[in-house]
Length: 57
Image 1 (tube, one colour):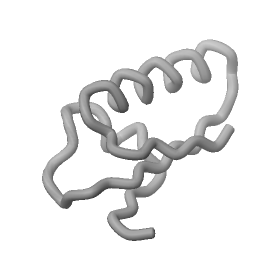
Image 2: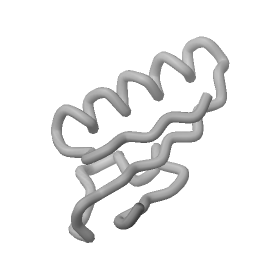
Image 3: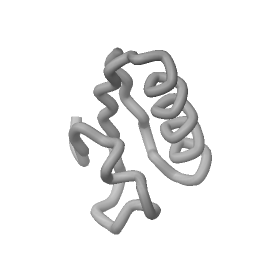
Image 4: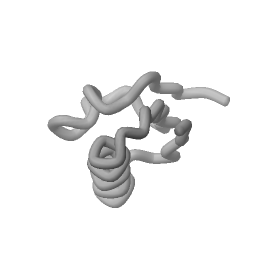
């Protein structure tokens, strides 16, 4: 499954972690990317769940 998270703030991070756990429990490979507005650090545990990060369209 491919997914794009736009703005992985607190809610996006929660959705990403929930989707990753759901896919893992069902044996579905997840490729999650994030479109970010900044270059600051991500919340703990988020970078490991992402395939790629984009800061520009």
